[in-house]
Length: 221
Image (cartoon, rainbow, N blue to C red; front, side):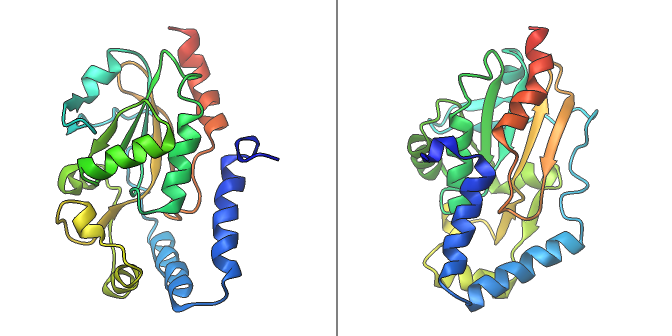
């Protein structure tokens, strides 16, 4: 079976299985503990809810052009996908999965948002085969505004840095703050009709579910 025949959940589980197959490690234990703390704190639960209007944004895309939420909504319903960045294998796989449905969602659009600088958003966009915009959440400001930003504790930050990943540098010099991966499906007036927010970054919204939520909106286009 080819990878494109697998669900996104199956692809993400394969990544987790490969990591687990390497055996117990302080890094894996710290990840489980970090996610456990986020889950215990209900991280992301206060992000915008179904029925809310999505707060506006004006963010630069992979080409340096500023893109607004209003501009995107003028073209139809919208899928907003928050992700951590090119350094995260789960995010890379997630973006590939979204790119596989980008033609099916038309006239709706997809937009990806992460704190990473233009260099890295361009890299991930090309890797995923996406044609939709990859926006830079400068200073993690928008993620903070919508209650999706989390601080990485010193222990977890040291382990990530020890693996050769310089998250603050990827994000243009920010502190150790990253977004909770999330998906919001908006109708044309910016109202949220579906949301997926999970503090466990190893789980993501299934593209087929996104399409199912979009279908009633597309039927009205």
